[in-house]
Image (tube, rainbow, N blue to C red):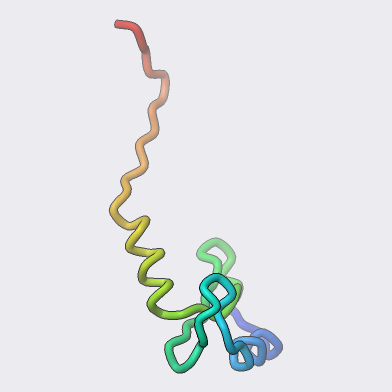
Amino acid sequence: MSISNVEEQTFQSATHFHICEEELGTDRVRDHSNLTGRYIEAKLTTTVIQITDKFSNRIPVVLHNSVTGL
């Protein structure tokens, strides 16, 4: 993850997580884009785990040139 000095200051000064409005104490992590590696925002560790768990049990299925009506 690439993080600038300004982004690090923003992370350190964040007090609440904007989605659930819970206070960010020591239970905070730096969220980043998996595509670009850029810093996004400070999040609660528990929220990141819940989001990860929500999508970790799904398997994407792609149908290509499927024939229907057989």
